[in-house]
Image (cartoon, rainbow over all chains, first blue to last red; front, side, top):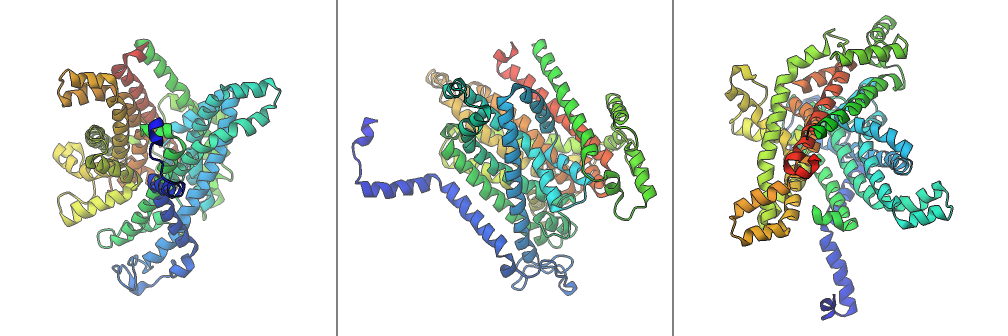
Length: 291
Length: 313
């Protein structure tokens, strides 16, 4: 400790170099966030950035990428670039909604499990069972039984994500519960609800934010996978998975229909994972050292 | 040891009971009329009634549940609505390609990922380490269908080294099977490989900082032997755990990979069932895949006793 005080730079330079070193250490968060902001911009500005993603132009079937059609056209002569731009909206909506829905439900269940033994015994058995079911099949089962819509897709993807959130929150709650200040709160007669909200909940925020980013990335991949299999977002909506699904048949002569949405998908998931990894390293140095 | 295995085996029973219950309740608690949804928009009332009867939805719920559990215990996964074939028969016809694909992907992933992780940890913070870490971040983000189509484009369409799509059964010779499964296995194994490489590196880094590693080096043990015999074996528990967890990833990936490469396996069965909304098939596949995952987890639990004898007690 003492050795670090030997050459302390002047206060002003230290502040700016602190900011710089924070940025350097967290370059994954910054890089990921910038990519995500760009994608958000594309999603919001879609009507100004691209033409009609649904317009059929039979003369322009399966055109290569060119100046007129940046990403080429599909078998109906629709502009792949426009479809990919509009697809950004679907992916971001799905990723965000699932992250919020799954973490919210998982948080409530996890806190209850960590706090009440009887709830824990029942809910954790159910979670164990749900975790044994591959996420994509659970979503497929739900979608088979209901009329396809974006809301159903979001719900179907959220359900298999819940157990992991519950486990995480529960483990945090269990470790916090054992601390003396909770005992003190109980001893001084604080009501259970208040202990949960005021004393336990704040401890779950950091790990939950990190987990939410992974849920978001996984949801975007699952939506694309489901749409690719024809069990996701209704086919008339241009989502990346739907575009790839249609490009499947013509892959050998028109690979661009598959590649452009696929690359965008990879970039999106990569950006979210970078933010997640960066947040994890910043918020929980203990895990960071291990990874 | 036997007691440990027996305890682990017993612990799988409640999990499978919950899976079975969950799948059953899914059909009954879904809002709306599943029979009408399955029948489609232009079905007549008689057709909807027929599907309702086939799903057993016309009987009291307790009778249905008894019948369903009774069938499951006898190994009957139900009957397809549209082909009227038992789901177990359909599964048996499609099992080989999926099994070969999953095993091949597992072998490819583990065979590449563990050396990558070990070298990355040994040469930590070097350029090799950065390449491995870069791969593990990228490999985990790239969706399996993009990897699949890229591989097809490069190795099948441009270079013409391997077939574009399809599957050759083992009965027509191992060589053909391996050629037809090479690209799918690599595509499917990619994310899994990234995950295992990352955890191998992390786990090895932790072990390499232990005193006994320094001792081994000091007494003149050759580096490969230190890395593999002293370090890797002690780093194995988290690695094996992730191999088990990642298997779920592999199962979900099988369905998509088979669609990309046109392989007539369980994935194709799933996609056909989706198109016809043939719920009994999907229900059967869920129970089957969940069972496979539970068995893999059991194998992982048992393998712990090999790496860490303390667990045996």
